[in-house]
Image (cartoon, rainbow, N blue to C red; front, side, top):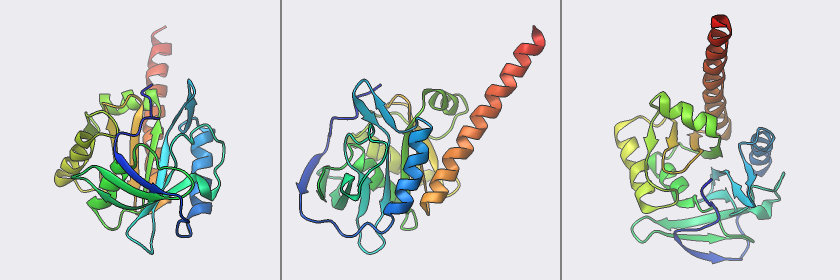
Length: 213
């Protein structure tokens, strides 16, 4: 698993109070389900997976703080507020008790794609990651958290409608998958639809193998 603890962008972080995170209860409910499924968690002392929600009152967004994957539940202080970002200088301006996830600029680019995108989910699943590549889902190739990754996300959605193709697999980030939507529920349901497709395919292959034997 690639080390998600390394922040590759420049971060200007202040510990001043963040705006009130109005979607905190909903975010925690979704995150609890993802933790229970092992899609967010920790491996070899490195946290993986994150989610973010656009702030409806400002131009920023809230994102799980770096290295929170091991925590079964989060307090509001474990969500960092990203108030500003710059893709050219690859800089994040954030505030709160903890610095934002190392994937914050990838999330920022997704929000930049369309103003109606309100939530982004990033999970890890080796089986689903392989399935999505085999089925030729939209994909990026660059290492996680890099400028190349941000550019590839932008390029994907210059060609594809974000609301009919609201998921992609990160080939350069082993196990990494992103879904998003106009709400947390939409992003979550897209992820569950991907999991359902994978499980149905796996079940079909298992059935065929048992018939042959």
